Every structure is written in C-alpha cells, then in structure tokens.
Amino acid sequence: MAANSVLAPFRSGRHDHGHCIEDALKAAETVCRDRGLRLTELRRQVLEMVWTEHRPVRAYDLLDRLRETRGRAAPPTIYRALDFLRDQGLVHRIESLNAYIGCGSPLSQHSGQFLICRECSAVAELDDPAIEKLIKKRANDAGFQVVGQTIEITGLCPQCSGGDESSSPGSENALSEHA
Ligand SMILES: [Zn+2]
Ligand SMILES: [Zn+2]
Ligand SMILES: [Zn+2]
Image (cartoon, rainbow, N blue to C red):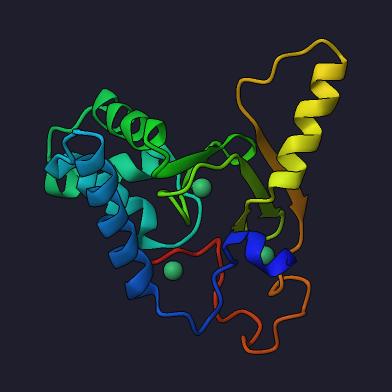
C-alpha cells in the first residue's frame, strides 16, 4: 500500500534516467494539449533542464544553463517559464531548498509530500491522500481553510543513510556537480 504512494522515488544509481526525461516531456505535451496551452520551446527547454540531474535545481543555475543557448536570457524569462510549469503541476518548488524539481506524476491531481535528504538534497515525492485528508480535517477543525498543501520532510536518503548498498560511497557527490 505504502509503495503505491511514491510518485517519484529517490534517484538510484541504476535507474534509466533517459526515461525520466522522456516521460516528463511526453507528460508535459499531454498536459498542455489537454488544457489548450502552448508548450513553447522555452518552457520545454526549462522543463528538460529541471529534469537533467533528477534532483532539485535552483532558478539561477537554470538561468546559467539557459544562457549557454540563449545568450540574453534575463531572470524573468526563467521565472515566467517556471511559474507556468509550476501552475500546470509539471514542476514543484521545494521551499526549504529554494529549488525546483520535476513532478513524478503531473497527470494526476495531488498535493506535494516531499522527503528531502539533508546531506545530498535528494528528493522523493509521495502522494498519500490519507495525509492530505487528515491535514484538511485538522485545519478545518481549527477554522482554517486549506488552499494548498506542500509538506517538506527532512531526513536521510537511502544512499546517505547507508541503506542503499548498490552505490559505492562517494560515487555520486552532490556538491561537486560537473554537468
Ligand atoms: Zn531519473
Ligand atoms: Zn508531483
Ligand atoms: Zn542523501
């Protein structure tokens, strides 16, 4: 039961990441087509960049990368594209990291429950309607009307807690990104 609530698991050393990006772009096309919206080249490019590392990424890092292909890109360019992707549920903003991550299931309606590794900033996304319902109920009890829910839970991912033996220590150092 619990396994079904994982929308996007932690990135493991062996997963086929090419598929992640492909699936994300396909889902984005579907979402935009169904809603009569345009997945412009820029929006598509930003979404692809968000998914590149399969980990949270900051707007300014995205802007740096965008400038490699679009020399004059200004900050509003990236923020407008991110706002669009976020409004359509294609990316989520992780407030505690001030960063964005691709949604693991943009075609389904869900509130965000995120497990965030405090060592390497890896993020997994859960969707458990029971959690959402309980929060709504407790909030209503307090006379509070819930508009949106994003829950950020801090801890250690399987790799950093030593639970994932498939990866050798130091093989993937989050702090030294060489993309
Ligand atoms: Zn991936
Ligand atoms: Zn999501
Ligand atoms: Zn970690």
